[in-house]
Structure formats: C-alpha cells, structure tokens
Image (tube, rainbow over all chains, first blue to last red; front, side, top):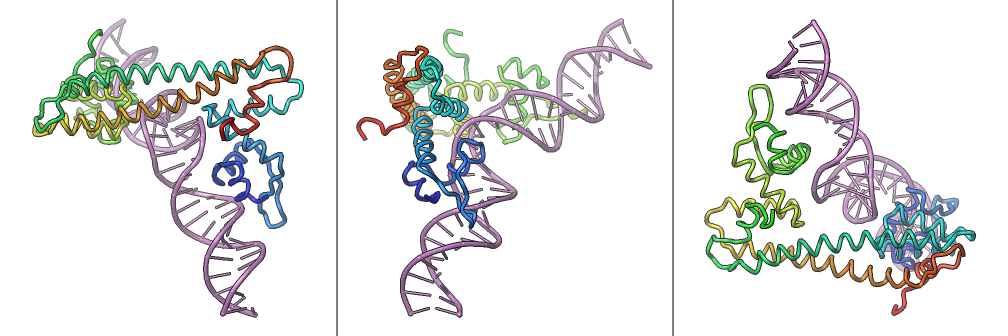
Amino acid sequence: MNIGEVSQAAGLPAKTIRYYEDIGLITPLRDANGYRRFAQAHLHKLAFLARARGLGFSIEQCRTLLALYEDRARASADVKALAETHLAEIDAKMAELAEMRRVLADLVHACAGDHRPDCPILVGLSQPAKGD
Amino acid sequence: MNIGEVSQAAGLPAKTIRYYEDIGLITPLRDANGYRRFAQAHLHKLAFLARARGLGFSIEQCRTLLALYEDRARASADVKALAETHLAEIDAKMAELAEMRRVLADLVHACAGDHRPDCPILVGLSQPAKGD
DNA sequence: ATAGGGCTTCCCTCAACTGGAAGGTCAAGG
DNA sequence: CCTTGACCTTCCAGTTGAGGGAAGCCCTAT
C-alpha cells in the first residue's frame, strides 16, 4: 500500500505518518521510485498508534506501548502501570479544568452581559482570588 | 521596579514577562542601562494576565481581555461572550478527557496486571473500538 | 579589584503535528 | 506523444507558550 491508502485505512493524515516515520515509530519499505510501501503489519501499527493517541497517550508513551505490544514476553503489569500513569494524568487535567470551570462559571454568572462597562469578570481577573 | 521584582509580585517567571513584551502584551519603559522599568500599571496588567492564563484563556484571548479591561467604553456583554466561549472550550476539553478516561479505565480494569503477557489494554488498542 | 547577583539579548528546544513550495511519478485521455 | 491531474517525494517554516542556557553588561559590596 502507498501512503494514501494506509492513511485512509488507519485514519491518520499522510503528514502524520511521515512524521511517525521521521521519529522512528514505523519504518516502511521503499519502492524503486522512492514511494513508501506499507505492509499489513505497518497498517496495524499505525491503527494501534491512532487509537493510543486518541486515548491521549503521548508519543513516547505510544513508543513504549508499541514495544510492549511487540514483545511476546511482556508482563501485562508493565502495560497496566503505563495506562494507570496516563489515567492519573487525565485525572489531573480534568481536576485542573474543573477548577478553572468553577471559577470562570462563577464570574460569568455574575456578569450582566449588557451594554454597560461594569464587569465582574474583569474585576475578578484584576484582583487576587478570594481565598488567597 | 526591575523585572525580578515584578516577577515576584506578579507570580510570573522573568522569562515569561520578557516573552509577553516580545509579543506586545506589555511595554515597560527602559532605564538608561537598558533594564526594563515597570510601573504599578504594568504590574497590574501582569497580574491580570497571570490570572487570565491561570483560568486557561489563550494568549490571544488575554490580549482581547486586556484591551477590554482598558477600554472604559466596553460593554460587559463583550467580556461575557469571550468568557462563555472559553467556558465552552473548557467543557469540550473536559468531555474529551472524560471519554478518554471512560475507555481507558475500562481497559485498565480488565487487565490483570501480572507477569503474564495477555493484556486486554493492548488488545483494545489493536482492534477497532466497540461501537464502531 | 573582584566577586556575586541581576540584567540584557540571542538562539535552541519542547509536542505533535500542519501547511506549503518545488519537484518527481504514474495512469488515462486526446 | 503529450498533457493533465492525482499522487508521491523532500525540505523548510509555523503553530502555542514558554524554558534553557550562553555570552556578556551592570551594580553593589567588600
């Protein structure tokens, strides 16, 4: 398969696939004309990467996941540990966003949103948060 | 005040303050020796920026907020609209994270996490998601 | 005079791509 | 046979919001 075809099949832009090759995540063969040639195994890897990225794993985490995926002697504990690390990262981000949301929603709620200049949002941003 | 002092007071690294000057968010004066000289107004702006960034507003949104902050003839509706836009962005990110979390937590839950290679997490990543 | 801290600019690096330019390749149609 | 258009190639630059570090000036204290 050429890059366009795997791109379609894996659901990744061709640019992204070239980038993944650049950083050593996949290594397709080359045709005589210089075109990348992908085997089924490459497509599987790319689809794997697409899903892992979709779950928010970083490229480096994906690299590790891919290595574990291909290591028949892996311990599932290693995979689980990585996934749990990432789960904790997600939880941290969600907590951060929830806190932002809480403060921001309060400010928005307090703002009349009319033609007048008085704005509790700007006031809130211009002074130390309550509780400091 | 020199940059070190406003850095302390605003809670922003000196590097960040220089960067904000670079991109035109603030424009401190200069002493004869080339040092940046910050007035109280600059400090207020920087603290404002620190809080807005802390709520997750992008730099460009901060630029707009700052302009509104300094515009006596603003309509609070404009501020509120921007804040609501950002609130929607936060909600979108939270929803995305929640979905990742849901899928990932399922996989983690299904994984024994022992010395054996069998791993539902890797299986989940290597095949289309249920519901596709 | 020198040591230290603070300040300056400049350029590189990060994640994870995306866009675009310049040009090679290939199959189909006139 | 030539052209057109779709596909592919490489390379370079830009994105967001800074952080790191080098080389070198400035200022104060001893």
